[in-house]
Length: 144
Image (tube, rainbow, N blue to C red; front, side, top):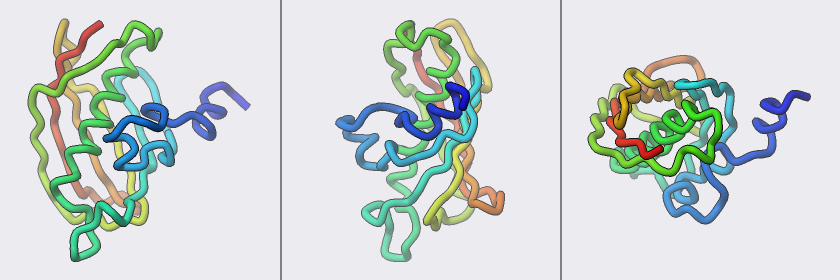
């Protein structure tokens, strides 16, 4: 088994338990499907505590997923993860195309522009059949 395959099965994709946003969306249970510089794809789930009364992802929580994927996508640009200290979200635009119903859905983050101090990242939410659910663009300030 390759190192990347092993990582897919054992390592939490974003952070260890104990980070409030990561714990809130239960990111330690997500599966990394693809990771390369400037691109990440994740199989995520929709916890019950994030549902609105219609059993959909509550729109206000969508930004948490977007932020997590955006930061992780920027982090993927660094070969030595120790060189990446943090990224601060400067701006986020979210387009809600269809409800996110779960129980599982796919998240894809891709760097659109990698500047000296900022990065522009697109985040795509799709259902398991490939239907587009949410599209977001995030500008992040990166600190190397």
